Image (cartoon, rainbow, N blue to C red; front, side):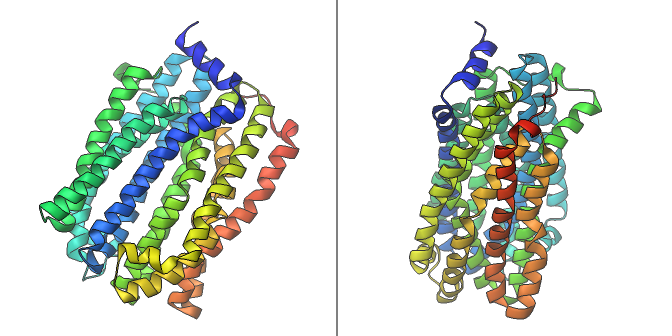
Length: 452
């Protein structure tokens, strides 16, 4: 039995619950380490003051922009990679991965050059205040230098994960996250490089993670990077972008929403930006297990849907939904119970604590509804129903939030800003439930024969 056949049998015959957990645990660990790094970064930078912390909140928007391109290409290629391997077509799988990787790295280089040339107006556009501008430029410099490597890493991470080899993806991402935490301590506390050191730590760790993921992919995966497999057909890139479009919407509108959040908080000073930045990072941490299991669900769905194992898809969907909502609920309860204590860990300024603690309570309520939307979104994206997946992504990331934040700010000021994202998360979660129920109840009608 060939390596491709062994992987196929594992993906379509292993016990559903066991397989999703095996695929989801490495991804969850990766996300936990990445988010622990984000929290550690917030902690270390928080010791430097409110303005540096506000700068990291502003540059979080840039990281979301980078991730938007990377996830579109990585998950788009990954979806077709799973389909190709389910059809036992290794050459086609190589083509999707290689094409996505090289076009992504090129996009990263262009973003890096553009950002470095126009660094000051760029960080102002992202929402930097004048008092945080110096810190935004120092931190943003390294984020931009790392951009091509961040995009390359995320594309490789997704291709490895969609092949069903999440452990190797976990190793590369986790190594970078752990190095980043260590680098923050060395560059900020020991070498006293301030926020410049925090940015340098991020840049260096991303490059090392990129190198590790290339080694993992080339050594252990069936689909590998190969220059001769770069597609010359526009159809290949269209298929990648079409399948990955929901990810672009999800991450891209997250970037836009974060940028808008920074802008609407700007009149309230660095305290407001720092507080909302801390809240955003805690929310992302709360979502780790739910989204991690969901990302283990994606390659499972892509393989089994292509193999016409529809009952396995439904079984896996319900399991993922329950685990995701349950895990997020537990961390949301913590955020509602001790908000002041949590904010104080990262910043001890009274105004930041006052603003952040109230915002965290509302955010913790809203975050419970996010797995409802993301699980349903991942289902439709993985079965290549990108129109529905795009609609669900659009609802959560921007369609509700963007007009809502301006309306609520107009009537209720900073209090309205605090509740705008939680309300949009609740709306998106409730709206996605009919799509999930429809798939389960009407699966025989919507599961028409897959493309060949």
